[in-house]
Length: 65
Image (cartoon, rainbow, N blue to C red; front, side, top):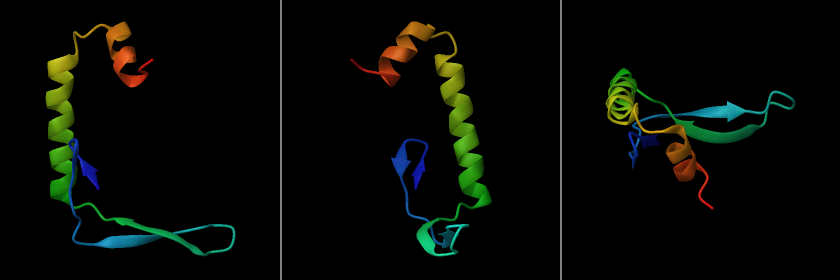
């Protein structure tokens, strides 16, 4: 799974099922509480670092021409 900008392995996965026919669509990583805490901490750091970055500059990164 992608966690704080890096691909990390998850110890467990769980199945995602199509609600229409109940077929298994995929297995996805099961995050832990520690994974969630790390993601929140990294998001807070990123916000503090980039909160004054002008919107038009953010858009350039998200939608490169």
